[in-house]
Length: 147
Image (cartoon, rainbow, N blue to C red; front, top):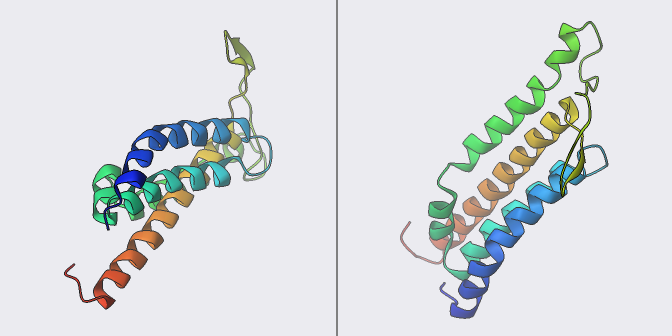
């Protein structure tokens, strides 16, 4: 399906949704929901492109198989617990670097919880897009179209 108005809106909203997803990811890395909600926003950007054009176009825009993104996310989330083990603390204990400030951004907090949230972010993107693309292909096959 190719919807001209939605395709043009997706062209404008796509980068905005991706930037917003990264902001939500960083803002929420020490609050509930940062990686999960940010991942859903990023996946929504690609789904919007898919609805405006077709899911094959959204796959081309993504450039990476969603299962690979999901695997990287799961690996990153698990790896974020290793530094605590190396310091003798329980697995997934949060470790933080010293806080520093940047102009326009304010105080920057970096640590293992942020790495874990980036893993969740990537896992949610991969899972959501894999599910969406699979359902779109299934619907296309049932309609009698070519895959």
